[in-house]
Amino acid sequence: MNLLSVNHISKTYRKTNKKAVCDVSFELDAGDIVAFLGPNGAGKTTTLKMILNLVSPDDGSVFFDGKDVTRNNLLLLKNTGVLLEGSRNMFWALSPMENFVYWGSQRGLTREEAKKRGEDLLKTFDLLDKKHTSITMLSRGMQQIVGICCAMIAKPKLLILDEPTLGLDINATQTMIKSLRVLSKSGVGILITTHQLDFAQEVANKILLIKQGKLVFSDNVKDSLERLNKRTVFEVSFSRTLTAKETEKLLTHCEDLEETNKVYRISNGEKTKLSEMLKILSELPVVKVKNVTRGLDEIFKYYVRRKE
Image (cartoon, rainbow, N blue to C red; front, side, top):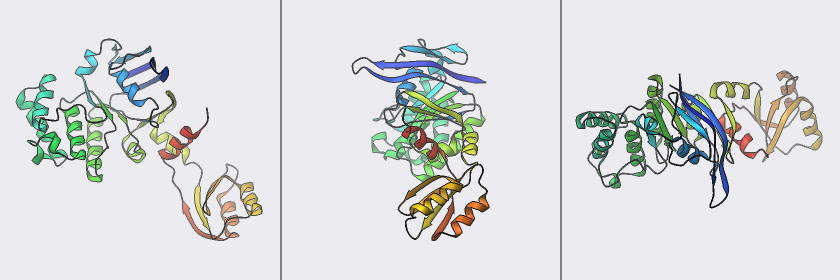
């Protein structure tokens, strides 16, 4: 079931005359975990702010649960949990529990409901002993976890997380991944911006990639990685730099030959058998051969480095 539909939204900041977002469209279904990727300044945060109506789009529309919320976002806000970068969904002078009670009451929860849900969330992240500690006294990672808990307190239909892994250690990140998967299975739609590509690959089922305000890639994560890994890729270390003749011989049977410090990344072409490639390598001064499985970082590098 479609939960969020973003249709051709654009935004130009008049003071700088910078087109931050240009004609971006995508859909998020209930249960989706969508990773929204892009380099710094690509337009990710501006897009999130337009979805939440914190910034008005110049063009385009946003639909939530089938209703237009572009100019009237009350329905969206009632059903959305949000963590913007910097954990700005908390009162820093209050404790986690005081924040849960306040934000829970804003979403229609009783004091006891908010406290119970808050305690359950803190238990999940092994942070229950900090429930009465002022936010200012918590570490950066702990503050991030409490911010995520505040976003999740009212069991929203849509969860928007802007750089949720900032400050988190490995254990907290893995706990969050498990929690997001549980929410996804219950039908919550989740939109995440992140620079942690390994985290995005592990948790998301869909990927969006924005560059200079334009959406340049949109696909299912599993399908895109399967296509990316159709060809066999080897990372080969040689005892010396290959001669021009040796390189030319490799290129007659292989594609995408890249070299860095005597380490070559070689992928076989569509018409080249793996046995032919290995035979050629056997005649060269090979020190080490390693099979490479390519991930989202390869897709990210390709689209970010590609010229318009």
